[in-house]
Amino acid sequence: MKIVLSLSLSLFVLLMDVNAQTAAELSEIWEKQHVSNILPSNVRHKDLKSYLDGLKKIGLKVNEAGRSYSNREIYQVEFGSGPLKVFMWSQMHGDEPTATSALIDMFTILQKNRDKDWVKEIESMITIRAVPMLNPDGTDMYLRRNNQGLDINRDALNLKSPEAVLLKRLRDEWSPHIGFNLHNQNALTTAGSSNKQAAISFLVVYGDAEKTASEGHDRNKRLTAAMTQALNNFIPGHIGRYDDGFAPTAFGDNFSAWGTPVILIETGALHGKDEMFLVKMNFVAFLTSLRSLADGSEKILSPSNYELLPNNSSGRLTYFVFRNASIISREKPKEITSGDIAATTDRRRAEFTAPTTIRQIGNLNNLSGLEEYDVSDYYLIGRFQPLKTGSFAEILFYRKNRAVDWTVSDIEKQYPPDAVFSLGKWRKPLPGKESNE
Ligand SMILES: [Zn+2]
Image (tube, rainbow, N blue to C red):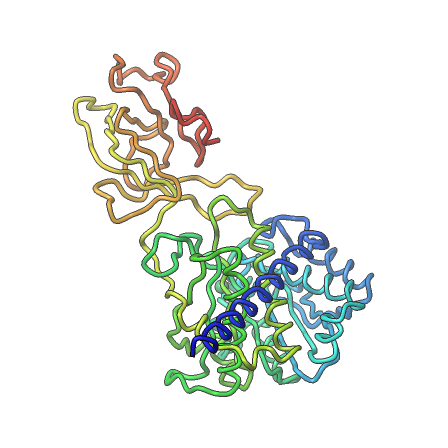
């Protein structure tokens, strides 16, 4: 009994190590060979075209598959010649860009490593087709919807948008065995009841409201377990499971119903890591699933790594919390509001500065900030407008022991503040917190 136990333990350790090594290898190969060189949120349709020119130059099949509502080209890329058909599409929501760059890196690295055994295996076992950036009009506006104002992912049955018609046609003509539906989710989504950001969330999508299991669904659970295991090497605790309510008009659910079981990957955010890190996480996930499909190792995997993922949750996290604030009204300086201040930053392209807005003032013990500051030693006033819910988090901080005339119009000049928070950054850091910037 003891021998069996220690044998299975060492086998377990061995398996763990092999997987860890694979994930580390994939991360390393991405570091050395990735070609995406623009932060994904800054990528426009013209940038995609130049990425695709690069793919064509190294010999990948890239063809124009159709046009968007505003006549922008939509492309499909292909790799491999195997019997297993894998179809992937990204950015059907224009402001959800991470996976587009990851697909470009995936195709580049597969093509450049065709002499390696693991790539030969993928090439001979799988054919991959992908549409990077299904919604180029939305992408160029950095909006979710297409230029008709339609959410393509709610148009799977009505088919009112040319992008949805195209997506359905590409599936129906080819009948892929697996679909990857690639999105981004809110940066403040948390993994379960923790206050940890869900940097990646998965969902193995059912094809009906009754959640009928199928062979393809079971295989996708094992593939997702493999991806989860790989990503646990980099972002443990930051992986969630997306809500699995059936969405009758969404593509993932209908692809699954039409015979192409879908894996949904939602990229969130991770405080302190930039967008390229999340591209790498996508790349590691894609290649992990392709490798385990190609070498058959997914067949012996347990789905439990997927099944045990904590559900996505929201409402626990915000960008900034200023604890124990004493807010002074400049009109009525004797009226001081006490409480915590929560502020969030809008989602914008990385190249644009986004305003930070006050969402809540009060006792916010149930809320965590990605950044938290104890400001109990200071009086806070609004830089341009009074500090209240809905106003910009443009904040001046004055030590409580200073004598300040709050009513003067050029207060910032006459009484230089001890700290200034503006556009989501410390223009002048809180004394003792200089390292924050
Ligand atoms: Zn989306």
